[in-house]
Image: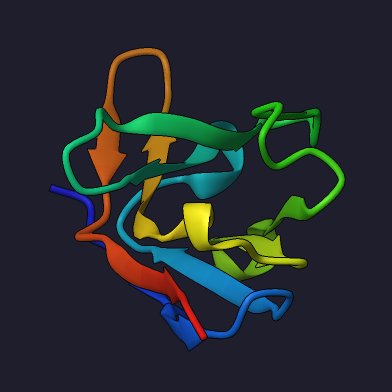
Length: 115
């Protein structure tokens, strides 16, 4: 099992920003795609943003223009910069790293947007 360690979650007011980090170990990170998912209470887990090995990104319509996914292969890490946060962004955020034959998930980090 490849550990994915997430950090950066917390409580923020509407309109605020947070930056999530996910560090991978024990795997050739540069050859794997990465993504952030989220799951709100009572809802299914949904894809928020993805980044390929080539750096190509894709976003859910609900976060386009507000969130930015990036990666640093030298640090085996993927990031999610979240701006203009809304209460509906409240969820547990999960990091996912996958290749042709494997897929790994982090333990999740709570993001709460509330005044």
